[in-house]
Image (cartoon, rainbow, N blue to C red; front, top):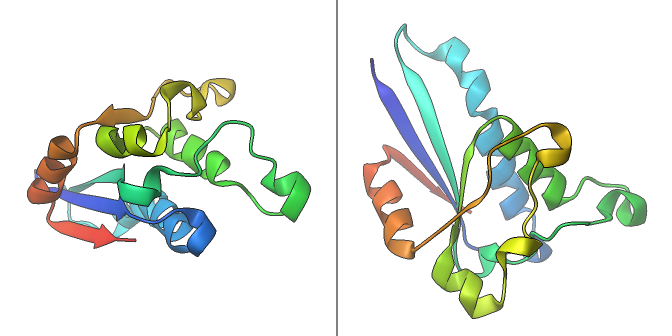
Length: 136
């Protein structure tokens, strides 16, 4: 069985453009590509936030109330709900003051998966193992 690994690397916060939202959307869409795969092939995505990309993922965002759009928090929850592996760079979280208790989870939606805060070396390893690495 062939496993095609993809790494989606988010380097910028959503406040500077749509790139982080595109990464979330692309990572979520991995499930739909299965109709195009040969028998026995799978796609395993990893969604990784590094640098300023770790900013902006706090609980309690009110984007729908204020702007009429879905928040990054809701997109992260959907990723966790479908068991997508989401990683945040530990060093960058420390650098920008992002703590574990600020991060969203999908508990309220029945999801059990959590965001993994890992050293950059682990994210580097994911990139090295991936057949496709996409930077956002």
